[in-house]
Length: 145
Image 1: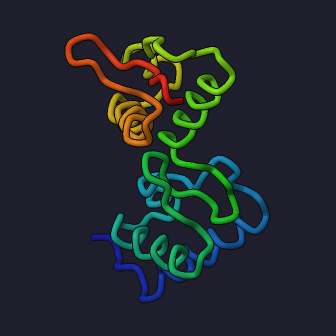
Image 2 (image 1 turned 180 degrees about the horizontal axis):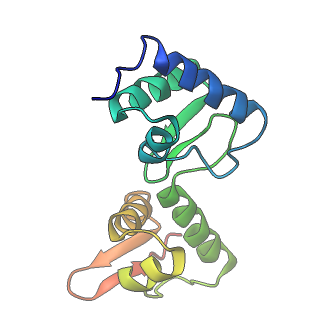
């Protein structure tokens, strides 16, 4: 039977991760809970406690649909990036009023995200009045954009 880890192990892990963050080891985001657990040889609950400590101190943040990122990163959620890109295309005239938006499947393929992420982006554009849905036909750029 393996010996139990000493109290405060999560603090050691969080301090190690904090030092790595300061040194710039994680430009693409913090490793997954499973990866950290394997590296330090601890249970997932210990890893979660260490990550929660980092979030509470403001070193990392959780971005919906992305994962945990270094707090100084300006990475927007994927649906926000998709919205911004589609809105830019609408404003530049690449998607003029009345044009049908690409299908969800095409947008999933283009942006490399889940269908739910694409739906949220399009729904937000629809709520803002930039896109209108026509039942059974698709979504179109609104004339008021």
